[in-house]
Length: 71
Image (cartoon, rainbow, N blue to C red; front, side):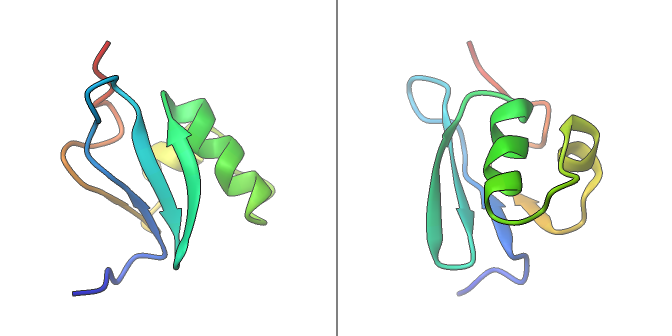
């Protein structure tokens, strides 16, 4: 089933990184909120920052929320 959210951050991988997808495009592996914000800026959301990433209703967090970044 497709996500209702245009941005999906997947559960942490073994190295702690989380895949980030916008629509059907994989943007990369994020290792923190700044990485997610940078991916979103590159995708056209120019005002994306850490606060935006933490609070945006456009993002579906799978396997833990915005605070889940294993070391």
